[in-house]
Length: 346
Image 1 (cartoon, rainbow, N blue to C red):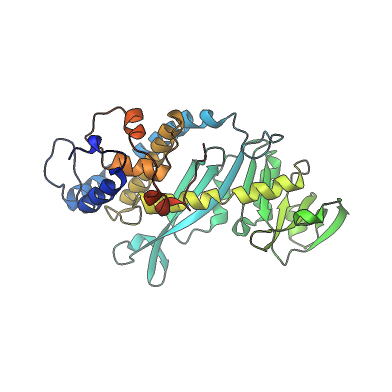
Image 2: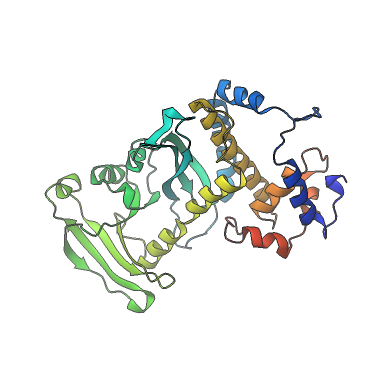
């Protein structure tokens, strides 16, 4: 059966069957037999990974303007909002000795800065697992007026003050042992989950020197999880509830990591050198960007997961992409597989 001739009713079931039949084979256009694992391994190890990194940056430049006018967080908020985080990809130490992470374990880290308008990865750095997350702050060119959302792992007041010097903003989870003095407190609506909105100064002998300016401290109890969250920020103008909502949107970067690793099979590498690993990661990011771009341009209601499935079994189909996607309707059968991983609500 030709993939392009699948009916709406039987499409999803046939997609799953075809994927299962082809999961251990890799084909190239014009070649009827499977390409060997060693052929792809050599290609990944010998072809410079920067080719794909540069292509990804080119795609980002095309993709970001499509979301420039989106008001996803607040009608009053014009700032660009970024989420910064990393994910660890475990490796076998005997095969990847250059990526030693622990005594008997190897790993690489994918450090990512995600533009939350569109969930676009605008900065990616691939390191071995031992590199601490906070070091990523030294590599980022901070944009004036942009807001950077981070968790506790990025607590370094010297580096946070560098963000302040660039006239940028940060929102970071506060640590429990932080020493500070309250300068003033704002009135809050406690029924919304807010506990306090304070202006503070750090009083620790080291932290007060590294960050000599005032900070804003917000304490909030999430009604969905009952977690008590403390945020530190150098932004004194954004509404308190908007700060809490922004940090909640930071979860999109976790979904990005999950989508990349699960749906683009990034956990199984074709090649064992640093170049091969970086090549495969950047190819996965390019694939993500192309699929997301197609979804936005075609205004498709299909999820990224559905589009990935359709394209995966339609490599040889000459049907235009917009027609191909409209031939597939959503079904309850596929919703069950991706409902927790949806990233684009367009």
